[in-house]
Amino acid sequence: MSTILRSHAEQLFAHELEELQKQDSGRRPANWKLTPQSVVTYLVGGILKNGMEITPKYIGSRRLMEISVATLTTDRALLLYGLPGTAKSWVSEHLAAAISGDSTMIIQGTAGTSEEAIRYGWNYARLLSEGPSERALVETPVMRGMKDGKIVRIEELTRIGADVQDTLITILSEKTMPVPELNTEVQAVKGFNVIATANNRDKGVNDLSSALKRRFNTVILPVPDSMDEEIDIVKRRVESFEKVMELPAEKPALEEIRRIVTIFRELRSGVTLDGKTKIKVPSGTLSTAEAISVVNNGLSMAGYFGDGQLKAADLAAGILGAVIKDPVQDKLVWQEYLETVVKPRAEWKDIYRACRDLA
Image 1 (spheres, rainbow, N blue to C red):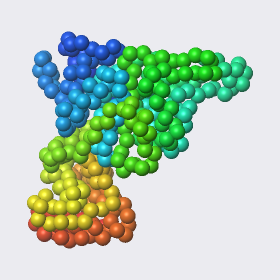
Image 2 (cartoon, one colour; image 1 turned 90 degrees about the vertical axis):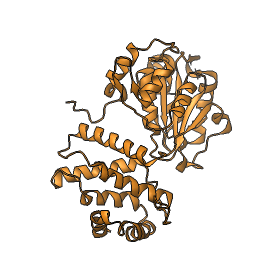
Image 3 (cartoon, rainbow, N blue to C red; image 1 turned 120 degrees about the vertical axis):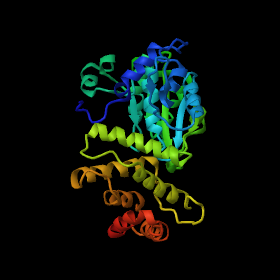
Image 4 (tube, rainbow, N blue to C red; image 1 turned 60 degrees about the vertical axis):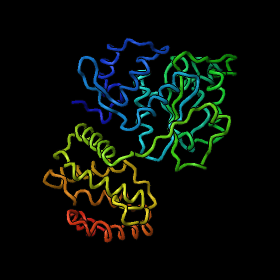
C-alpha cells in the first residue's frame, strides 16, 4: 500500500491510461498521449474492446467534456468556470493527465501570485555572481509547458491580480514568451496549452480583461442535474477516500449518502424535493465537494469514535459545519429547516435528534 496521501491522476489511473493508449488507433494531436476520443472516454468512463472498464472521473454531460477536449486541440486555452465544488480542478487534473501524462505543471492563483510565478524568475545568488544567464533563470510551469509541449494548469485565475493575469495574453496569443534580459524568447512547442479554473463566487474580484477572455473558450461546469447523479459522485469519491485513508469503518449505506445529498440539494435550491415547502437558503455553497467532506468526516468519526458503522450522530457535526458559515443568519436558516423539514420525516428521527442536540 502506498504511503502517499494523494497520488497524481496519471499515477492513480496509470493502468487505465496505459490500456487506452494500447487500444488507441486514431490520430493524436502533436505531443498528446491519447486521441481526443480516448481522452473523453477516460473522463466519462466506458468499456474497452478487451472488456476493461474505464471508471468515470466526471459524472455529467459528455458533451461538455467533448467541448473541453476539442478546445485544447486548437490554439484557444480552456477556462473551466462554475460554482465551488463542481469538479473544475478535478477535471483540469484529469485532462492534463490524459493529454500530457503529467498533471503537475500547475500554478495556484492567489492575491499574492506575481508575474514571476507565471513567466520566469531568477536565482538571485547566481544572478549577482554571473549576471543574467540561462543558468540563473528559474523556469515556471508555464515556461516548462511551452518547452515540452504540455498542458499547464492555472487554478483560481480570478484570484490573481488583473495586471498579472494579463501577462498571459502574449503567451496565449503569440505562443511565445520573451526573455528580454537574455535577448531571447521561448516559443511554445505543439501540445502546449493552458487550462484555467475560476469560480463564479469570485466574480468581480479580479475579472478577466476582454483581451484575455478572448484567448479562452469558457466551459461552465454545472452542479449535478439529478439526485442520482450527485449520489453517485459522492459514493465514488467517498469509496476512493476510504480506500486511501484505510479508515476502520464500513462502507456507508447508500441511504445515509442519499440523506446528506437531499439536505444539501434542498438547502441549495430553497425548496424541498417534493416542491411543497419553500425554505430559506444559507450563505454557503453546499456543493457536492462539501457533501463528500461531510461523509468522509462521518466515516472517520464512526471508525475511530464509534462502532465502525456510519450513523446520523457521526454526520451531524459535519452537516452543521457545512451549513452554518454565518453563526447568526445561517443558524436561524438551519434551525427552521430542522423543525419544518427534517422533524416531520419519520425516517429521519435519528438525524433530527443528532443535529438538534448539537445546534
